Image (cartoon, rainbow, N blue to C red; front, side, top):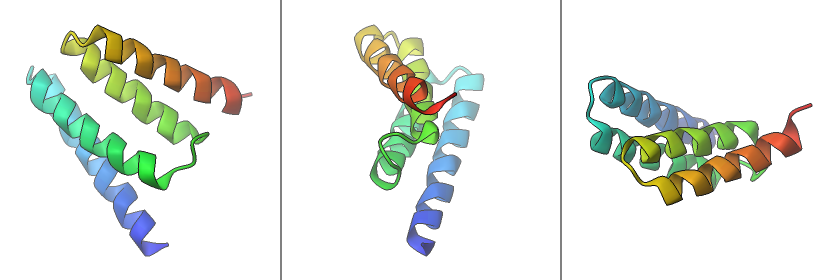
Length: 88
């Protein structure tokens, strides 16, 4: 599906931009880009897709860096659940 592929590329680009903002210490902006990426992936991926788990993990890391500890913990648990269901 072309739309799904385009959305996947867009999500990866948002994620990469977020990573770069994190590297230069702009954690709030990084979080915004992680949220954009995750929103797209949550719409196009299965709820048991390991790539979605990675997105939850990335989002949680960004939240952690912004001292949003309760949200980070929740998203780390979501990532762990998906990984525990899908990885050997």
